Image (cartoon, rainbow, N blue to C red; front, top):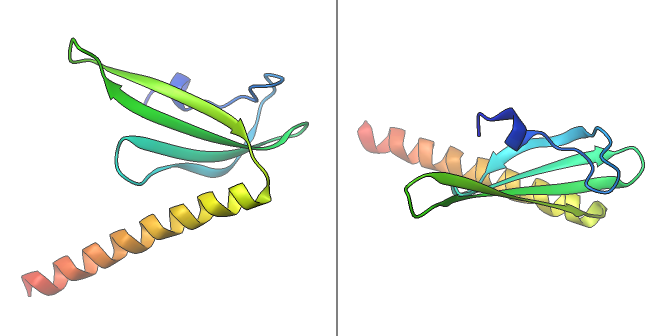
Amino acid sequence: MGDREVTAVQCFLCNARTRKKIPWFTSNGKHYYTVVSCAHHGAIKGKIRLRRAEDGKIYVVKTMRQIDSDGVQDIINKKNQVRQNRKERRHNKKEGSV
């Protein structure tokens, strides 16, 4: 995910620059999600899937879709759930080592 060409998001309808509402985040290490806003077309959901090729290299499948406010809220809820799960895992790890 260090490649700026992969993480850059332009509106897929008009190729205009977008503003990030939610930065890229992952829930399992293979799928990354973001929400950006286009001035003309509104909210756009981005999803990146990392796949392994037969020769051992990794390639990227990037999907962009226009979404409404309910879709934005779903992504926010998913991000908050990931945060909560990580927080609980860290807390349990600290308790187990004491």
